[in-house]
Image (cartoon, rainbow, N blue to C red; front, side):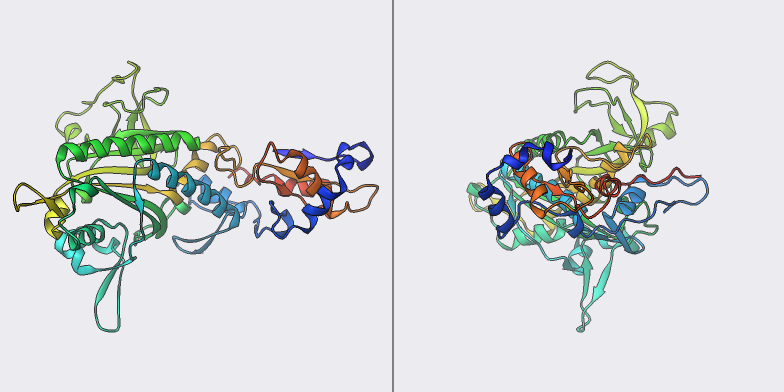
Length: 431
């Protein structure tokens, strides 16, 4: 949103009480940011990724060109101030949704002994994608891509868990690491990424399934709240293991998964929606065999490409049995806890939003709930002179009831340049 201020003698803002302007000028912490003081290294628009006919990531181009991210090395990025504001808003919404289902936040160590991963067999399964380091004593640690082993060992160390603590739901928002063989598409497939991971522990499978449904509903509510068009499909449990799995996808041309969905269906839980990887064996034995109609709305399903932004797993007692995470059963018995794990790739989600909203060639835009700023005030020169510092501040005070955060543009620029700076750039069409 822009607020353009014409010449001073036409503006009612001059009638604002002098004390209001004076207080805003001398406040210790101004409730806004100045464009001239934002670290936003805008780059010349050019083709930044892709070779030949390779699919190109619009989010990589747009976020780099607009000064949201800066590549440090292959698959590793600096998150710059504007991008950090978007992530902070996303994380804030995550905290609220997790609190609503009774989840407690913690922070687990990024460095986890590789012996834990060997106990579950996942060290060999992940192979070279698992980043490891060695300390001076020769102990090897994993730079965690996920924390199933670590959190289950933690709960196992304090077991048996009292029934009064169940269901136990623990989550964190931390950096994760994966040694991608081919890091590409900017934040969509990188070596270091921000993730929200939640782990649930219940006494019975029935209770675990109830927790699963509750978390899935919380994820659906989160995406709706943020204005993100995510669809839920049945997924492959893969290296996580377990009995039940769903994925949330943002549909976009650059997506690396193929999903069978009805994009216009208003029901988020159609049983026919599925990642086609799940149907691979079925297609190999009976080519073309797949569901054709959405079971919720009756319309035809479509084969689309999607970006996986979240995944939910019902793990059963797979990890609990290994690490002794249990609760007290009848008599003196100890019963392994039933687990679930639930992840949202936050930095990937940010890029997926850009991909979905720029698929038609549009420039960088955000859902209102994620935009780094809601309002930008641009103050032109008055009779060739730079406007006073308080002019944009005063205008912000007028409109503050309609927008809680603002971004005054600098008056030292020409009006066209100021508007261009406030409007995020769009890379030129690729040739």
